[in-house]
Length: 73
Image 1 (cartoon, rainbow, N blue to C red):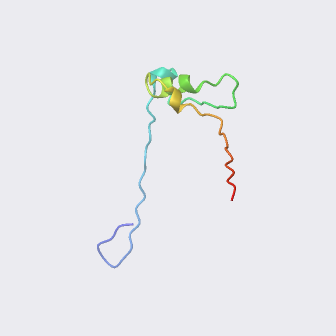
Image 2 (cartoon, rainbow, N blue to C red; image 1 turned 90 degrees about the horizontal axis):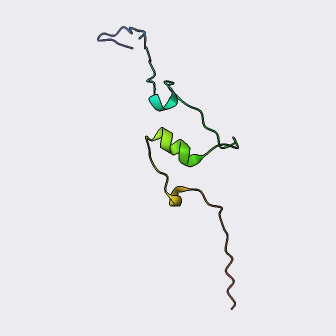
């Protein structure tokens, strides 16, 4: 909306979007990953997406554990 008077003036903008391609994705603009796939490898995904990034062992998810503390009175 644009105006410099008391009259409203509406203007429509035409936007163009061009996605960038990625050499590591074979020239595609994106790549799909899913942890539901039995061949999914999180470390490999990080390496592809973040250009050779090495996932540290502390970054890998672990199974939560629970501890119970009992105190007597």
